[in-house]
Length: 633
Image 1: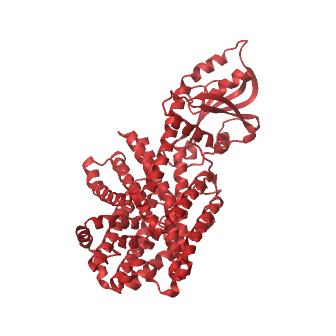
Image 2: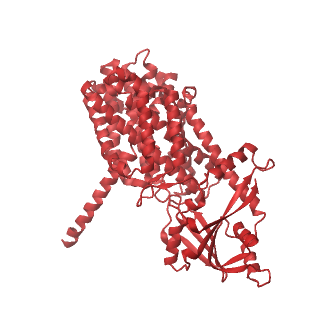
């Protein structure tokens, strides 16, 4: 009796925490896919708008929607990919980091595949806010046609305000994400239930035969319609990317208990509405509601789309931070907007780039109808890449046989290839936009990766092995540098060789500190590194030590905090008598280098735009000494 009574409160707390995580995942993870009913079915019906649509085609379309949600989201993401994690973190780059850590036979192919998927996600982060908010605000035209000319200005104002508040963090706002989005899903489900009775024949859509017959009879039109149908699963990749924030079980429970039923009921209701009232084909979502409810639903839809946009923007911030820590991008400024949650970050440069991209899309396309074709390409491409990486993952990490991996993943791969092919038909209608975004970002990532590699190769020719240097300076001679009190910490990426800033300090200042620490900062291919594994200190001589700090690609790389931890563990130094020495390189392009001149200039521009290491690593600014050198690349 005592044991059961004592255990009950713990069970209650566990249940409350699980429900809180489940509610949070409804708001953050499913915000994007929850807004797809605004436009997905409408776009799928568009090819039939001129000549009319038959009953069998409506039922077939809804069947196609339901089974797309079932196969792509439920089976692929909720059941399979949520189990393919990197120490609890999901997403394209997390999976790529794990494959690179475990080893793969195709490292170059996996690298380019991974960064292409990440680039498509960033393109999605521009298109999602523009399309979702436009779709919601366009509901005002049904409230009163007089508001038609105000749709674009209102959408622009919402976007500017949304990006303007990013610097304040999402902690306070995110408290409302779950409840508002839960209300949104309840409204979706209720609206669907209210209209399913309009024509119960729509329930036949649960039979997948209707979807197959529709595609068989529709021919080329059906193939084009597939591109719009795939809009129903927009945001499904957020299931995977946000795995580390909420955990597998709450995300799965939220989909099965709330999101999937609400989406299914709403699409069934839209289909039944068209069966009984064919004139509703122009906007089946908003026409599901009576006139008195239109304005509240438009306002709720706008809130839901803002939440969906916020989720994608936050995901883009996290992805760029991962790319920086994994060495795919230069160090940009990262602001932490919460003292307790390291996942709440703000990147000013990325925020500005996303805002500019969103505004350009709004002004160029002007309506959700024009912008929708641009959306499908980025989603299908990103999902296809997840499947390719998953194939390598299940073989390397789970030990699946090749035939088993093919049997499970090949059907998904072929299905997504069909969807991608359908979306490629829309390249000239705006589908080129995400490809352009992705191509630009891939060029940037590859240039940075290649440039850093060339820079290391060139500087390696002038490097002096650290053990030889220590042996030379430890010998007493009349040319030995003057010893000064205190500790000097020299940052370097190659701990086996003498840091160039140390050589320059002796060459120009002719001094050597009483204690010298060669500091290397490593980014592990895991999301987080435990504090007990944070550092390794090795004594090299009486005056020299080697210190290695390790961070995960999701960690805040705060060197000052890590050094404070080292002091508690016995690393003796006084911060006020310690100097941090950093090398600053001036890069000069060389036509004979390994990259074309345009790529040299791009690499130099990125290097110049990188944040100062003092700020990035949170070093005490008044204790930092920088020495520069010129390097030809």
